[in-house]
Image (cartoon, rainbow, N blue to C red; front, side, top):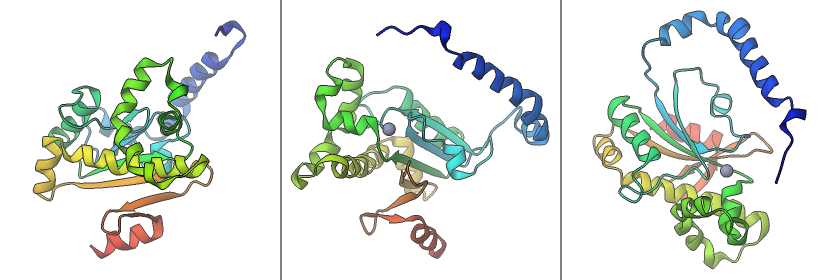
Length: 221
Ligand code: ZN
């Protein structure tokens, strides 16, 4: 696979974007950025897929300083001790040092990682991706009995994967301690790329419910 980057203006456009940000956008929120210049106190750790179509701050309408974001292929959180790497460090730091009050694991429709998990052939030349997706393998096993195909299978796997990664999160000592102290909420979301809707996992009902229902339930708590 070769690509001639000399004919591509995406880097130029990135640089122009930064220019626009620092000259126009930044000055408009100078107060906010000045407040943030030497500390942060985000309320939420937002774990989501690296997919370019998922934009946490846009989806949640949050400002800089509100979300501590961790992104990777498939919004995966390896179980504690399985793979002590970047994600585990982010979780520990967010919970122990930043003392976030919420952790959201946000998957999405049309997720390439979940498609890759369903079609192992597609990742056979990608040893690193393949190894990483093993952290989601149990989600695939959990839906095997359901005999789904095509997009239905992808959606079901996206759902199972969120359940699994929430389970993995609970194996992290920092999370377990904060949960025991009632100092942390865990929530699983699915963002619909085609419709901009978010479905929220209701762990009591064991199903994903529309946002309006999730908001009502949260208010009732
Ligand atoms: Zn994805």
